[in-house]
Image (tube, rainbow, N blue to C red):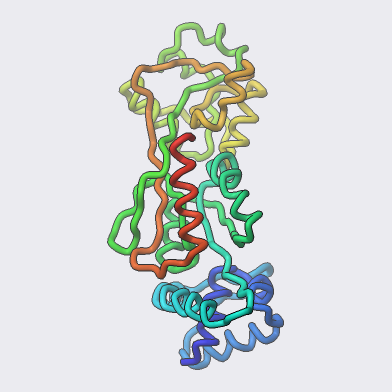
Length: 293
């Protein structure tokens, strides 16, 4: 099987787009399309489903990417070393994680690396989906809010998120003494119908199961924050996300328990993946900076 076809395949798999892969490889879009079709003919299997915007990898493509990503990355490093006097363009580092943590903490930390020439491609999403992508070779690193399982992924703790129950000041007098019973009368704002963060807070702090339905669901914690600042109701947020609003008084922490709920975020990568210099730089910078988050 032609290594060039596999390299093109991996670029399309990681980029999720023929156009983006073509730019990354310095090739024309028709050339990339032709190489993918040639590889599909050789394998006798479909690798990508064509979408109105971009492509979606099939299960066959995910398995193939997991098999070839490590060896191809290692070959790319050797090839770059073997070009004396030529400034090789390193492949981008593919990073995944939750939108809020990436935007508030991770991307500001990585800005100096981008200035120094590190190419970075960022994908946001839910932890399970991102970890599946990591296993399939779509990502080099994933910031995961759940602990990865299995031997195909290695992970180290990155930072702890402290959860805090907050509302706009106007709700404080209306609620009075903050109890689980009193909070039943207050609209609950959350980022998912199953109330994942709020359920954890209720169980940890109040010792009961949360049965309230959400009044407002916004699939982005920054949207949840904006709605609650505007007075929509109460919510549970990572403290890092609402530090400024708590400092200015736009939000009030309704409780300050001695033992607040904590969630650990992990920095995950594929076990046995070839060590790429820019991936190593990114990992080391994040682990160092996260000590002060």
